[in-house]
Image 1 (cartoon, rainbow, N blue to C red):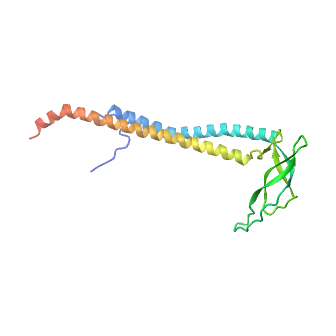
Image 2: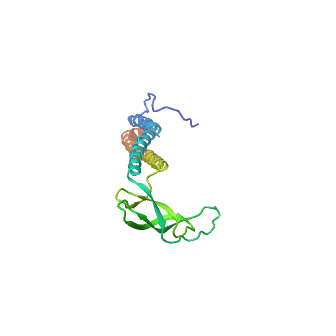
Image 3: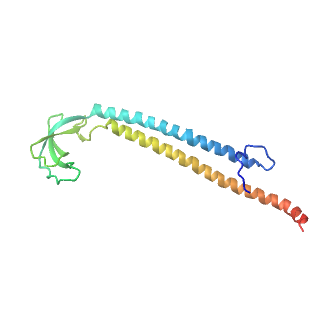
Length: 193
């Protein structure tokens, strides 16, 4: 007996209320925002983050340089792992700063490296020990994470606002029905035996 009529909110009908039309337009806006707005927001933020990260990586590459360092202590011997990868350890190393003075610090080296072996460390323009500059893959990881997070946040906001709006609309609709029933109810009861 029950039949679903598609698009009833868009058709002219004496039973259609203004809230039905508003709800239909709101649903259309939600669909457009989810299909177009969220991906565009994610893409825009992703490209912005990509440009910033790429500029930061270029500045790091210009400022940082690698120098030779000598291990001051032995690295622990590696325990064989099922994957076959050798772990890396932080050990004390010595290098010459740009001004010529000798400095020591920690550097990551292969397991089993011996005292006196050479490795390389990254220094900034002031001769301080720093990490390597950001790689291109790290720039793209930041870009993708920012874009996906922004698109997800946009979806959450749109869906949240839509759900809240539907709740408000449902309350208003029930209040309208209550007012109409208060007005029509007495007449209805008069005609029933």
